[in-house]
Image 1: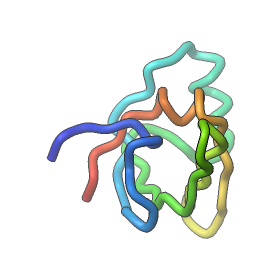
Image 2: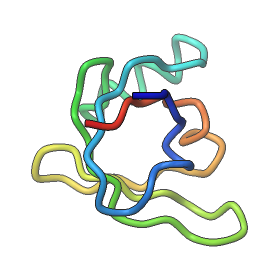
Image 3: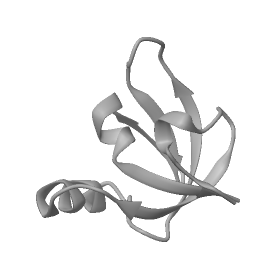
Image 4: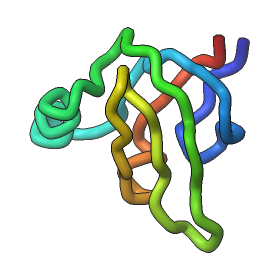
Amino acid sequence: MPLHDLTQVKEGVVCEIVEMTCGMGFVEKLALMGITVGTKVKKISSQIMKGPVTIQVGNTQVALGFGMAKKVIVEQK
């Protein structure tokens, strides 16, 4: 399957995080929310015009800003 960033994934799709193209501070911030490489997430929703992207990690929903979501590379499962 091709790789995409979170903004390109359709709502309701489960995918696995394969890479984060950002600095260590950002990686650590995401890790505190349970978002790490190898984690499976489900895209819940996104807003038009570069709004936040909501994902489900386990039983928790997390909203990421558009710029943050662009840096999380996933593979659809």
